[in-house]
Image (cartoon, rainbow, N blue to C red; front, side, top):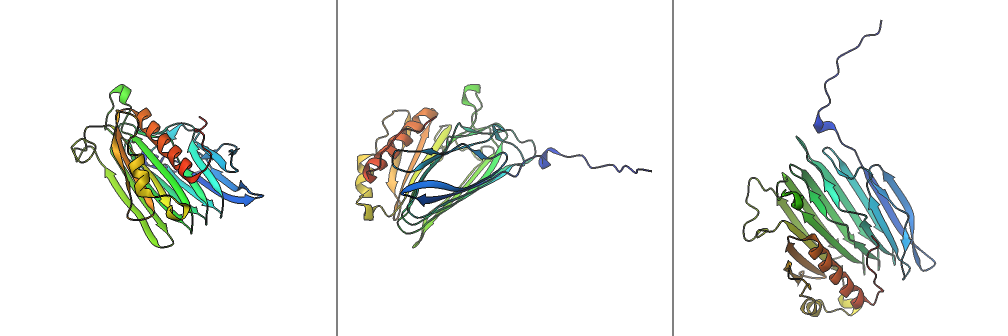
Length: 286
């Protein structure tokens, strides 16, 4: 006789997927190729697109349309020496309502000697009652460069859902062969603290950061002069500043109520950096 035992109910906390993405870029006949591409749903990538200077553009996507409670995504990116890759997304990444849990994302990046990585995803949209923990580790080998950006929309503004997410934790750590370049840890919790206040979000609902890391001096770029020349972001709707790190890097912090304004500022900064590096530039193909 078949014995049927009662199973405990599956709660919302245990619903989620273990997404994985592993990308390895290598050099072949003066061009960058995608040597390894491994993905586990819901993380996927589209077919690589070769750009005008032998680099590759990669578009990440998720068929689920966003991040749900219990999801844990792990992204591993490796660039071999002399390669150039640009990684972006096809649309904003939505972080949905989470009744009694959270989601996590871990990104580990290694940029090989003399390689260039541009990691430029679209915005995160934090829905009401969502909670996301993200950890990013970037390692630069000798002569490597990395452009890294992030933008966050604190709710669906058109619906009046402003800063009603539960928590957004973001930890970014960047190192090169000499040690630490950046240690940035932010923990946004609208309920326990008024993050509208001066010194935090200053009443804005969207924020963004743009970074450039590497030994730019060896490439003939004066970072202080770069900051002086590109301190204006070309729009009255975005507030922020561009400054140098303690060494080998730039950081821009931006606030706005219009996502398009941050996207425009990011485009201007990337374009200016491409000109300084004497690398052909084209807008992202969306």
